[in-house]
Length: 140
Ligand SMILES: [Cu+2]
Image (cartoon, rainbow, N blue to C red):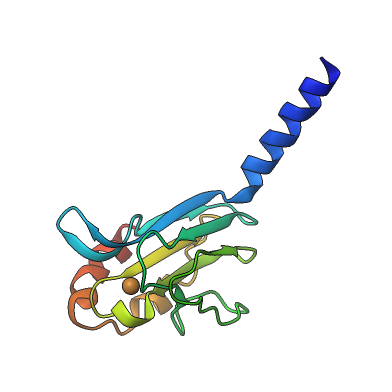
């Protein structure tokens, strides 16, 4: 019995920390093409977001000026699962490098901190991303 409890505890710890949120990178979702399965996610400071390369040809790139101060550049490899542990609170805007004008954009709000919202509003999106960004930003 003691071992069973220990095992259950270890399993719980592992699953709770492996990835707190998972987002899929997709070629198609419903009527949308080139899309992250979740466009906005909210996490706590210290949480990890995992992006699954369900379809090929995508990545995650933090947008310059679209992350809190002190956050380093982040650009994942194409076709690969990736993850990021969010230790600094604020809004993080990212896109898929080849599909950044096709609406493949996403936002992570960390620690319910929206202090860099004005900077996020100044990001220059283009084409389809420019069309969908305002509504997304308004619902952050
Ligand atoms: Cu993409």
